[in-house]
Length: 259
Image (spheres, rainbow, N blue to C red):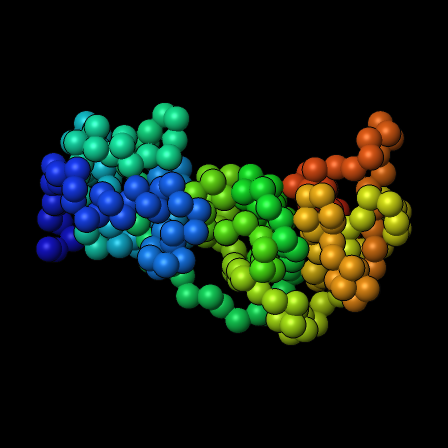
């Protein structure tokens, strides 16, 4: 099939449909398949704008006539499905009429001097995706997810990341020893100890350590951190959501870097 040819699928038992259902509903399926499912116009555009060429572009029959001029040839293979079949694949409450299948990017090596965010066993997919979005927004181009962190390319993380994945160097399933490659200082966040964020001079570049939603940064990482910081909370709450804390810390770093 050439880039301009389109395949129409009408059978619910088609192997591609079975693969898409698995990728859309099983957070870890992409690791075994080596492929990622992006659902919806926004994520597909974000991937294309970063130069990502999908293996397969998938469109609902109702969308394809109007989408053909913009999206024809964007993928190695284009597939058109009956609307009901594509809706049956979707993991969304309101199914999207298009999606991409991407080959899972090969894991990069750690860049020692890169502004970095380290995710230490974060469990919530929404938190992870939100942090990826903040990392991309504030110039922290490398994210290292330690073992036990929610799968970075899972559908919920992709949706929460809103396209940030395609502007980041993502390393997942890392062990603590991999962090030894970093030459930038580590900064651990805490709700109860360390310098006040708004009063401290932040190093840049650095590696921010963002910990588990309930347990925080692990003891071994805290011990090895060059700096500990906490965020002032005049309202008196005990702690902040980790994604909110990450956004505040990364913004403070970006502001400090610009001087």
